[in-house]
Image 1 (spheres, rainbow, N blue to C red):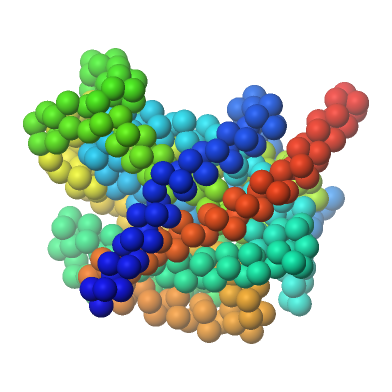
Image 2 (cartoon, helix red, strand yellow):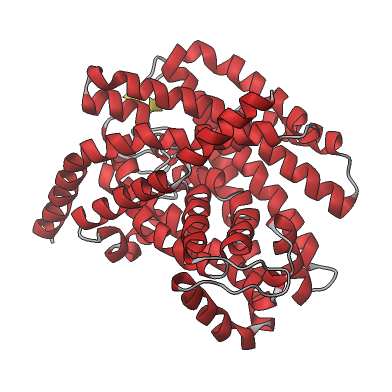
Length: 452
């Protein structure tokens, strides 16, 4: 077992190493340049489309769920432990400068997420149940041709297996840990409660997931943001100094301070980029699976809605977490992960802050389990057909209490590795299909301008 673990650790260090981070950032930068920074320039238009897409008109009826619900389903899977524990780990290991590199990752990641959703809607299919299905495996097969189909198969295998770790057992374990620490609830009890709640939602398929996500995601995100803003208001005097630290340590080594061991610039870049990608999933290829189910006939409009996911996840939610940690001074305490975020909130809101983080983490993880269940189902459907969906769903639900009770060091390692491997087929497809994205985008805005 130790030999297997060491082998997977070696692969993990490669797939999350400099080449992968450069590849993900490089593809995002290439798409940003090719799109002439359209995702940043049209951010306001994206929010207007999101608001308009809360319900779909009859003219836009192709698909299962309204565009807003598609975005919320994607966000339900991305807004998770990465926004609380991941940001804290990045700041702990890379210093305050890591937050700057998370922002940079998000800005280029918006172009990546836009391209993913455009291709997902453009190349989606209708399965034997009449449901619209799409994602990297479909735009690889339908966009690049059958000679590339093996690459789509690889993506589907990685996604179907990785989901049990990154989107299921690891999330359940995080919730169980925080529920026991904050409320004394046993791990298994948390797992059983989660299993029942998830099972009730999954019975209804993507429509039920979309409905629950569109209710829970805005509620949990806004509640967490408000709590974070209250803490920042209390620590207002420290905000200028915190921002100065972010920009200073993005380009110069962070000196050792208190329990913080110090970090080189490379550590800020590495952990900022890696945790940024882990949090918003731009380039991994997961979110377009949800966006393919949107009730729309316009790939560009859905792409503009999709790119907001990266902005909301990293530029807004992760920034609040990062600034709360830095302004509180807790980043020098020697504590890491969710415990660091909890300490930062509790410093400003004694006796309350730790409960806010505990509840937020539990809801974030619950919605992540829902979102990733959909990704896994679509992946096994691509591999084995619709007959595989129910068995996969049953296994998914049964894995939750198991994950809540076990030591998941090895599971996390395997899932984290497969999660990164998902990005490789997806990034290859994005590069090869980028001319399609650029052409569709040019035509859309040319037609829009002509109409005006």
